[in-house]
Image (cartoon, rainbow, N blue to C red; front, side, top):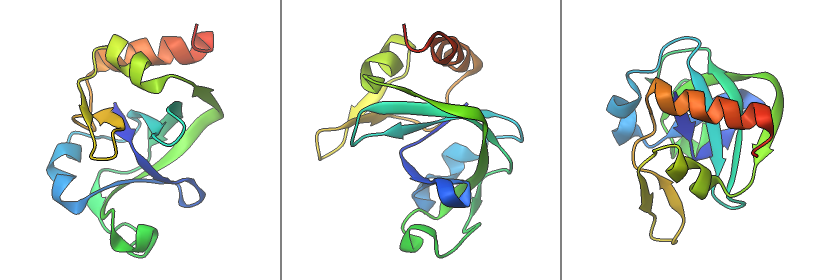
Amino acid sequence: MLFCVTKCLGRGLFGDRGCRLEYLRDIGLGDVGFLLNTSTNELIGVFNAQSEAELDIEKEAWCGEFRAQVRVEPTGDLKRLSEAATILANAGVALVDLPSGKLVPMLPVQNAGVAQKLLELIREGGH
């Protein structure tokens, strides 16, 4: 399961800084993904990985700032859960503070147990 803090949904990409590519190497085709919108504290999903992580799948995306990229597509209608930081922490995701004060997952890839908990919450609408 992967998280993405930045997005390029029109391109079907999740991205992270190029130096974090090694953390994304465990992503395989079909893996479950969620988008964390730190501006609204929402968790958005569900997505499936359509590629392995690579540098510069689309070099011009994010003006080159997020070079580690994974091609994704939604699995259906996207659902949004508010209070994402709390949901992630309750699912067992270690969070860290950004300099902006926003909480994000320490690592972009999580285990299957976390994915299952989040999938259940999405199905229940966050309740």
